[in-house]
Length: 115
Image 1 (cartoon, rainbow, N blue to C red):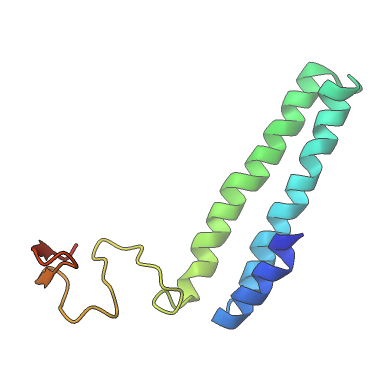
Image 2: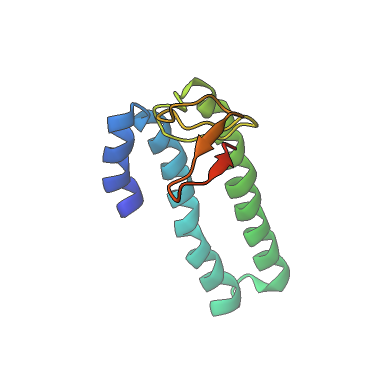
């Protein structure tokens, strides 16, 4: 699985491999349960429509909110500049010669505001 091998190596270079493995491992575990849920509900009608809906609902609740909450909690200690992500209201380019909000020269020669 690429999300547990190559991507882990990239996360290790950024110093977040432990956090990455927690989030990716949880997501991959739940992704593996989705085909099982389909096989038991729609595929073989073993658990019926209501049971299948509950199974998928529990998987959805365990996947989306738990991974999102984990991302927020674990992401508090990440160095966002090292990750080269600007996920704030005041986005910036660390390699830009000017400060955010100042005028910069575009590659085409015209003046554009830095957003």
